[in-house]
Image (cartoon, rainbow, N blue to C red; front, side, top):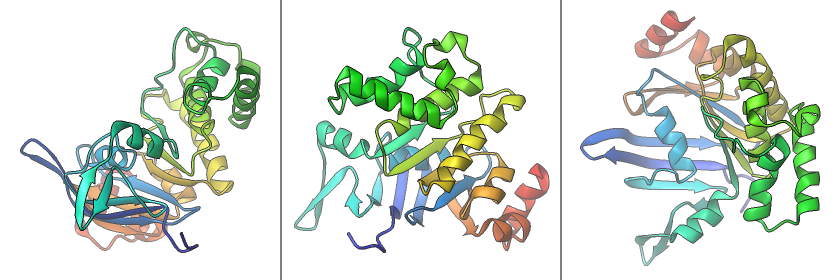
Length: 256
């Protein structure tokens, strides 16, 4: 792939759940090293979009590429064929995902939670996986909590473990699906600080969030979605502070 190949290239993507048309022809590019923040009201399709990037949802039409690779499909003589589950799992290894709920294994320590995927998916030995886990826990500021179980951690600490777990697979792209919405307000800042540090390190990120301050400070591109379409996109100061569309302006007038 050339240096100009976008990390994420979404072309005419539609998603139906039965009769419900959730994504209505989405076109979006995210360049390497860019932080793209997706904002919008509940039910606008934000989380569905991010889940499609990581193949947790199968698109109904269109094409979706990560670093030039067609995701979930292969094209033979102009006809698209669905990849096998094993092939899709292999593609998914390159994409880290952090969810609203932490989904940590309660019977494993923080270190063991972070070790699990490198051991099971990449076949790392225990010592190597433990070293990798400790490096990632240090990265999110949790070295001293490595031997604690999830029940012994705050929500913010659990979410930081979840970020470390995603980073342990050394992904090319990180996806965040409302990573702070399940947290008490006083714990939000510690998670956003880790994400800000990740962005500063050059990680390509797509972040679905309601944190407008984060979008303004960290985002390279802000996308405003409503009713399954991208209403507006651009630099944070343009979309948030000087929107061109009335629907965008109405949204930010309510949340700011």
